[in-house]
Length: 436
Image (cartoon, rainbow, N blue to C red; front, top):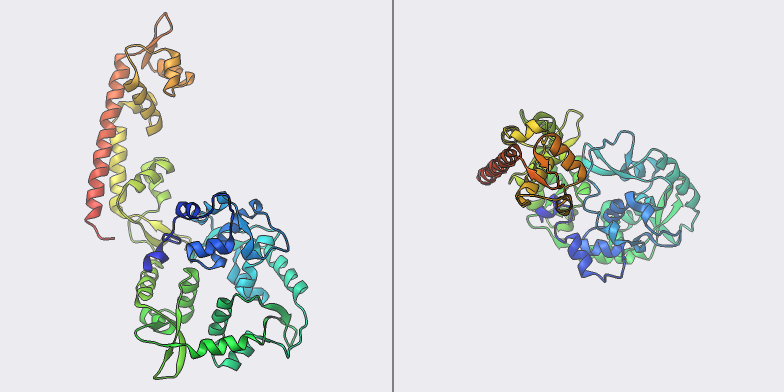
């Protein structure tokens, strides 16, 4: 259960999901939610940045909007960003500002003129909307809010008082009914969600079927144990979309939302990440600057290491992945290995250039024609550049051969790659012994 919180969607991969569905069928938002065992609002937020690629009509219910496979395939990676939130706002903040439920906002973001995207806030990468979305949503709220017969409809507060349960409990139960509320004006003219009074029968039935709590923990219990506020725990539960169950406490007669001890352990780890980085711990970008290597090179090396980063707040207060001092030392060691190669002297620094030259040398015979070079991916510009460095020479009949200097450089590149691979292997073994 905890692993599911760590990886938003690890239980069913995108490829498996697509394979399990009809290949000629675009999945709806609700179908994706069912496949991924997620709430439909999670799917909406992840496809919203790509809403221009969707076919959306005013009459189509949001859960029935079809998602093309190219959009579906990106929902796990869409939140990979380093962009700060700035003056953009989450759906929860916007909902609070205009006086509606968050789900009401989420149900409408695909039909807004403005387009949202994932940005970094203190809670990590979250879906944000631009400033102009506030006025758009407020205008929609004012347009759709209607006057209703209050003898036939009730809002959440009224239903909560009627059933004798909290508004949160009532909201969760109504969500399980899949009933769409009507946005109407309350007695003092404020917009509020209203439900037909017939839902009360369902709520009373749900109340009668509550199970007695055993070792489960309430939000208040978790907050007290972590030394955090109730609001902090509530926000994390919402952020990671952690599901709980309402249980009955016999000794107090109280009904409350409960969670297992695995949720407490997970939130305990999350709480520890909300601190500044330890001395010497570096972000991926910082490692790129320190080693003087390209971002792609550092990223590839980090993927090869058998270690996990820890999440700390950076200087701007944003949560970022940080790597231990040992990772920095090993990356520097690998960098020195590459710098020892004679390839650097001849402008072949970087794995792409050096590897291409070494591969061409290894695949060549005594002589190579221009066409044979082209067949193994060597361009005319490559050959011209290597000739200028005196790594290859062209004979009078147009054929090329590798000079003695070229052969020595190719050999040094091979030795350097073997050393780098040895370092990577040693690092993988070393990090396996270190608990993360």
